Length: 152
Ligand SMILES: [Zn+2]
Image 1 (cartoon, rainbow, N blue to C red):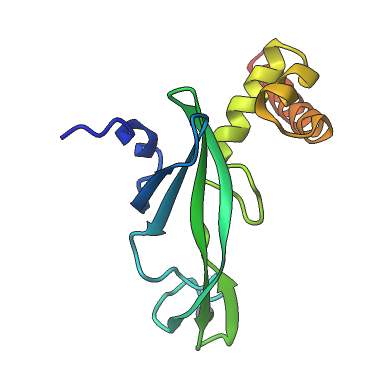
Image 2: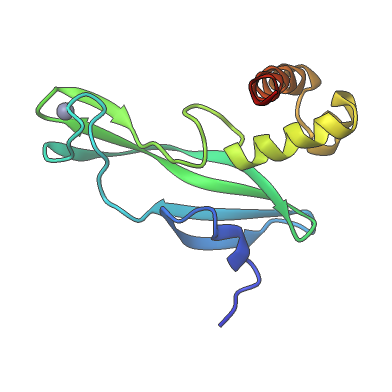
C-alpha cells in the first residue's frame, strides 16, 4: 500500500516511523526511532562495549515541507555509553547535525531559495531568523564560488 507520506522517508533510511500526527492543517509531526539499537563509540569506533542509557528529551527537527505542510521530525535524543572508553555520547542522526533544529535537507532547501530570492524573503517563507539564514547563505556562497573557481 502506498502511504501518502512514503516519499518523505526516502531520505531517512536509518529510521523507522512510529507515528504521524497531523497537528493542524499546516503542520505534521513525524515520530521516529532509529532502526539499529546501538551506534559506534566516537572514540574507539566500535559498538561492542556500547550500552544504551535511556533518552533525554525528544528533539524536534524541522524537515523539508511536503504536501504544503510544515514537517517536524520528533527524534529521541538517545544517550549511549561506551564501557571501554568510559565515554558518554548522544545518538547521531545522519539527516541533522548535532544540536541543530533543522534537518540538513531543510537547510539546503532554505539556502537554495535564498539564492533566488532575497534572504529576508526566504527567512519569512521558512520562519527562521534572517540572521541565521544570512550566515548560512554566505557560507553556501563561499563554498559554491570556491567550487566554481576550481571548475574554471
Ligand atoms: Zn569506545
